[in-house]
Length: 162
Image (cartoon, rainbow, N blue to C red):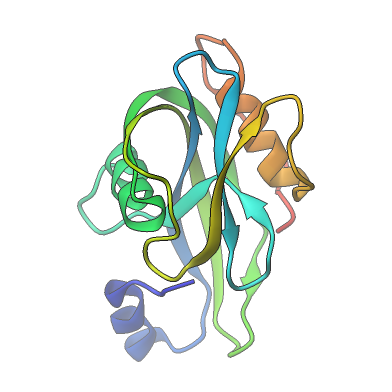
């Protein structure tokens, strides 16, 4: 996945030391909540909701909107915070380490022709909510939270595995 410029700049100062970064996940459904839009990541081939790193000064909900346009070329409305959680420490192939606080949002598709728009994904596809592809457990948890008709956000207290 593309590394934001601000992270590259931070890496010049801290090397591969652990960074605490904010992330956003957009669980995008159609208006009837019968289908969900997923992307297939180019780095590992897994199906996931749209995800991304929050830029400095950006609201996490704004990140969900921006990343949905950048990655899948769709317009969305953020409806609510679905869950807040923390990833495990991730060590990348180059030795860089990071841990993420994830803000998962329930979102509604407004328009656009879904497609892999920026090279971070190889496919973008609608799936019936009762026939999802194989997904990593923490992403499936985010999807479940995003599709739930709950009024309050879920607070995930266990460290997720990526």
